[in-house]
Length: 395
Image (tube, rainbow, N blue to C red; front, side):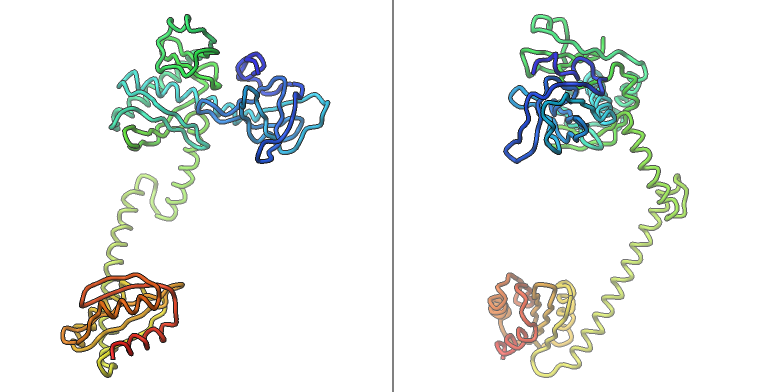
């Protein structure tokens, strides 16, 4: 399709248009698509997502440029021989225009202030990211960049798109090398930013609205910066405000006191958890004493339902101190697996590693440990049968 028939390049503000149907078909996965004589639908490319909307009332769910033609993927085939009335989802398009222009401004400021070049850009559903060639970014640097970017937005500078050839390119100081050598389209903010770009942009920086950096993280040898522009800033503010209102009620504290309220709760939680663990340990001591007192012979064994391997280990260690001449066999049926802990007091005979190897072969399991305590787990079999076989093996 020629550049003249890509209406989004003629005027990014075109919301509706008429065209003729060139052909329609289905791709390899069976998705219906239509090709038109001209279109205002922007196809995925250059970091910018596709437009959505409708053709004669039929929803357009994806747009791609394949082999020089723009395919409009539609929910159902169009009626043949009818003129096509196209309507793009303007809210989505303008959002993409705001975000894309905001990215140009942010990348230009990062490079102008600190020399941090942008090597990749992603325009997501909720936020955007750029990858900067630097290994560190300070809070002070990000704050200064955000301030200058918003100043450029408020100055209502013109955003100009221009088609140039390779000779004309020499007049402009581009921020990055071009990926094409013909049909070169520049997006220009005079005396500030010159970029080769095929995306859609507003006519002025003021229409970007606002820009807010949300955070950043190290990604290999680059810093990935997350941010939002335009209406997305207000959306984020609204979401966060609603969350803070709910938290204010739950914490019984105004917004400015929430941090201290949460810190108090976390401190109380740590105290509660410590007390709970102490109580659990005390209960395990009582449980171990009862098992030791009730035991007869050279083996103490017990079957549990839904008991963690960590608790079995603690219980086994307590039992070996109370019954130094006995072998301890503790088994738990936990959902779809059988787990065990074997231990022996210092005066008890036997080889726990051999016993463990036999036990693991019964349940096709894995385990390990020392000569004093072993643990393992595997396929679920009846725990009482497992214990009988192990006891028989010891005796």
